[in-house]
Amino acid sequence: MCGIIGYIGPRNAISVILNGLRRLEYRGYDSAGIAILGDNGIRVTRAVGKLSNLESRLQQGGDRPSFATRDAPRAIGIGHTRWATHGGVTEHNAHPHLNDAGTLAVIQNGIVENFIELKSELLAEGVRFRSETDTEVIPHLVDLYMKAGMPFARAAFAAIARLQGSNAVVMMSAQEPDKLIAARLGHAGGIVIGVNPDETFVASDIPGILDYTRNVIFLEDGEWAIAQAGQVRVYRLDGAPVNKQRLTIAWDPVSVEKGEYRHFMQKEIFEQARAVTDTLRGRVNFETGEVALEHLEVGTGHAEGIPARIHTVACGTSKHAGMIGKFFIERIAQVAVEVDYGSEYRYRDPIIEPGIAVLGITQSGETADTLAAMSLGKARGARIWAIVNAIGSQAERMAEGVIHMRAGPEIGVCSTKTFLTSIVDQYLLACALAQRVRRSDADGRPDPYALAKDLALLPGLISQTLKPDPIYEALAHRFHDRRHFLFLGRGINYPIALEGALKLKEISYIHAEGYPAGEMKHGPIALIDETMPVVCVAVQDGVYEKMISQIEQVKARGGIVIAIATEGDDFIRQKADYVINVPAAPALLTPALTAIPMQRLAYEIATHLGCDVDQPRNLAKSVTVE
Ligand code: F6R
Image 1 (cartoon, rainbow, N blue to C red):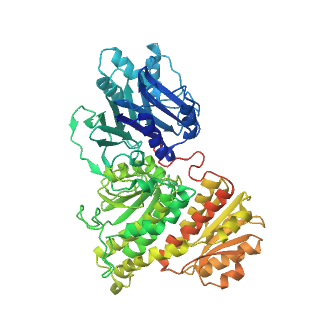
Image 2: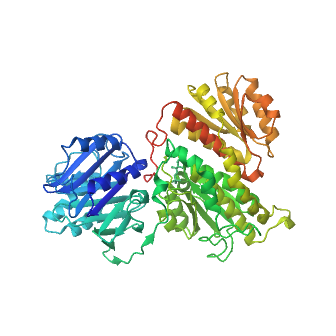
Image 3: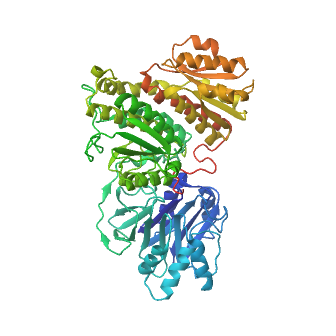
C-alpha cells in the first residue's frame, strides 16, 4: 500500500527520493514524508495530502538540509507515501518516524501486529511517542538496542526480528551514515533494491527506481539487507547470508510517463491493443494454434498431469477476470473452476484434494488476501499458479508456474489493461490445458487450436473498440449527476457488468451495482424508475435474446437503457435509449471488448465530475494489508 523509497549514492538524494515518490504515489497518497541526512543530522519533512504538498513544503526552504542545493558526496535519505492503517491522516502520523534523539529514521509498509505490546515495553523504558502509528515502535526499539551497545545493523536486525505481522521496513541512522537497512517480513509489499556501481536504491516497487537502474534484486519474505553505495548484503532472519540473483528489468522508463494523455488511466485504456499484443507475443503459433506458456507447464509437477480442478483466488477487478477465466477453462479445457475472493477463501475451509491447482490472479502480485489464499493452497499440497503483472512480486515467487500479464507498469490505481491481459492469459491457459490432453473438435468440444488462432484477431478488435466515439462524452454529460447506476450482463459478460459497476464507483464515487441480468427480477427491479441508467451488455452471443427481454423489462418500468451491443445490430437501437458499439467477435473473446466501454464510460463520467481518476480517494494500488 504505502510507497517506500531509499537512496544512498552521489546524486542529490532529495531529487531522487521525490522522483521515486512521484512514481510510487499510486501506492498511497494520504500523506508523504522524507528524511535526509545532512550536515546537521537527519532532517524530516512531512505533509498531509498529495506529494505536491510535501514538494511545496520542501521548496519553502525551511526544512531543507544544508546540502540540499548541491550534491553531497554520498547522500542518503528515505521517503514514504502513506495509506493510513494505524492513526489518522495527520502530519505527525506521516512517515518517516524518528527515535527520541532524532538520530534514526524509519519508514514502513504493513502492520506491526504486536505494536501495543512493544509500545508498552518502550513506554516503561521512558520512551516518548509522538504519533499514533504502529511504525513508531521501530525507531525506538532500534535506539534501545543501540544504546545497549549494538552497532546499527545488529540493532536494526534485533528490532526487526521482534516485529510480528507483514512488514516492509527501511531505516537509516545518523551514527552510521553509510548504510540503509531494509527488511521484508511476510507479504506486506515488496522490497526491490536497485544497484549501480556507486549507488543503491531501495523501493517498494520497480517504477520508483526505474529512472536510475534496471539491475535489481528482490527481498524475499524473512530477508533483510544492508544497502551501501554500490553494494548490498542480504541475510535471512537466522543471520545466514543469502546469495541473491540480480535481475535486469526490461521495462522502459517511458512506460511510467503519461505522455500526451491527461491521466494514466486514459493512457492505460488506450494502450490495451499494444498490451494484448505483448501478452500474446511468442506464446501462440498462429499457423498451428499451438500455445506455449514459457513459465508454466500445465501438466507436470504432479503425477496426475493437468489439474483435476482449479481454484482461482483474486480480489476486486482480478476476481472479475477470474470469473471470466472460469468460462474459458471449463468450456475449452473441461476443467472445473471455482472462483473465490482471496479474502474469503481461507474462511470457508476449502476442500483441497490431490490434483487441485490454486491459481492466484493479481496484477501487483502483492495483494495480501490473494497471497494468503495461495499460501493456504500451498500448505495443503495444491500446485500453485499465478497470473501476475509485477515482475519479481511475491505471488510470482510463491508460484510453481507463472503467466505474466506483460501489460507494462500500470500506474492508474484503477486496473484496466491488467484486466484485459489477465483475461487473455486465462484464455491461453485454457487452450494450453486442452491441447495438453489433445481435446479437439473430434470429441465434440471446441477445438483449442482453432480457438487459440482466434486470438490473432484480438488486438485489431480492441483497436476498433478504442476508436473515438462521441457517445461517451454525451453519456457523461447526461448522466454524471445520477446517484445510482445498474449494470447487467449474462453468461460470460456477467463479470463485465460487475467490473463496469466497480470501475464507475471507484473513480466517480457514484453508487453502482452489477447484477446477473436474470436476477434482476428477483429484487433489483424494484430500483428501476425513470432516473435510473441501466447499462446492459447485450452483444450477439448465446444469451442475446435473454438480454433483449431484460432490456424490455427495464424499459417497461421507465428505466434508461445504455446497451453495449454488436456493431451492425440495428434491432437493439429500437429497444435501448443509447447504444455503444463493439465489433463482432468470437463469443469467448467478447468480454475483452465489452470491458472497454465500461472503462471509457467510467473515465468520462469521473473526469466530467472533476474526480482524480488516477488516485481515487481511500484507494491504493497494492493492497498489502488484510
Ligand atoms: C479496481 C482494482 C482493484 C484490484 C484489487 C486486486 O480497479 O484495481 O479492485 O483489482 O485490489 O489487486 P491485484 O490485482 O493487484 O491483486
